[in-house]
Length: 81
Image 1: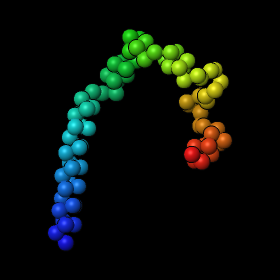
Image 2 (image 1 turned 30 degrees about the vertical axis):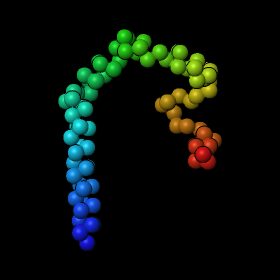
Image 3 (image 1 turned 120 degrees about the vertical axis):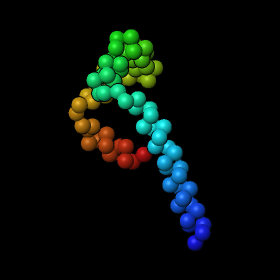
Image 4 (image 1 turned 45 degrees about the horizontal axis):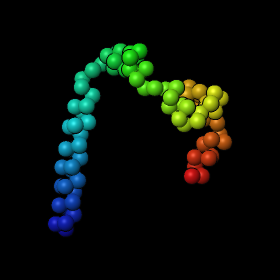
């Protein structure tokens, strides 16, 4: 019985300790401020998107648009892995 209480207390303390850094990471910025930060031309250029796509061997048409759901065949393939 004492072991269960100890484990429950340890898990609760661990969970509480993890939530503080996660909250602090957001930094209190609004969504608009994050958009302005993340969508700058300098940041987007630093992502090296063309180089990444080339390194992965992806060609136009190999991926579906992100706004559309994945094709059913693709969803089945992920479940089979």
